[in-house]
Length: 302
Image (cartoon, rainbow, N blue to C red; front, side, top):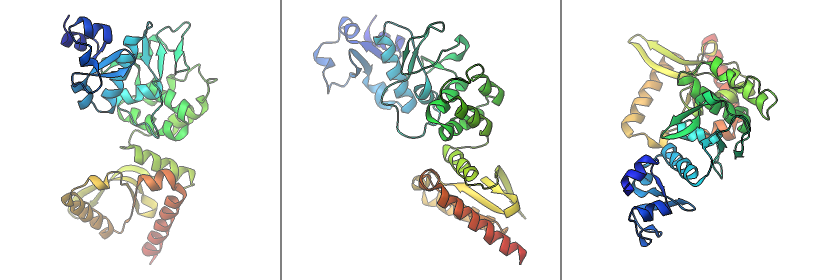
C-alpha cells in the first residue's frame, strides 16, 4: 500500500514505520517538510489535509492519530467528541483528548470516566465517537450547567429529542455532575440558534427575568420582516445576540439598522448583547433588560 492509500485508509494519519515502508525518507519526516506533519509521538498527518481542516476535522485527525498509536480501540468522548461533531464547547479546549476504550464491561479510560453502551458509539469524520446525546450529557457533567445548556440546545436543534437526551443519563444519576446534566437538559431549548443565545438565556433566567419567547417573527404593515432571537411580548422588548458584529460588511450593518428601525417603529425596545456581556457580565446585561422593560412600560402607558 502506498502512502496515499495508507493516509486514506487511516483517516489521514500514518505511523513513522508505515511512512518509511511506503517510501518516505527520514529527511521528509523532519519538521518543516511539507508532505507530513508530526501530530503525536510516532504518528504523522497529511500536511495538506491538516492545513485545510476546521476545528472538528483537526480534532478527528488527532483522534485518528491516538487510535493508530494505541494498542486498544479508543473512542472520542466528552469535549473531544463534541468538537468532532461540530458542537459548541465553551471555554478553553481540553489539554488532552478525551478518549475511552471500547470495552463496555470493564473499560480502561483515557481522559473519560464513564462506561459506554455499544449503541452510544457512532462514526463521525472517520473516527468512532459518542453519539450526540451521550456527548451532550458528558459535557454537561464535566463542565456544568451553562456549558450543558449550550451543547444540549445545539443537539436538540439537530433533531435529537429531549427524551433521547434524558435516556443518556438513565441509571447514571450517581455519576459525578449528573445533577447539572439533568438540569441542563430540562432547561435546554432547540430553538436557540447560537451558543451566545443559549448563554444569554441562562443569564436571564439566573437573574430572575421571565423567560423570553424564541425566534419570534415580527410584522408591520408590509408583512413579516424580522425573526428575533428573544422576545418578551408583555414588555414589547427584543434581545438580539450579537456574536459576529466584526465580521459584517457595511451592507449587512445598514440592513441590520433598517431592520432595527422597523422594530422601533412598532414600539419595540431592542437590546443587542455580546459575548462579553452575556458570559462575563450577565448581571449588567440583566440590568439593561430591566431598564428596557421599564422604558417600554412607560411608553405604552402614556
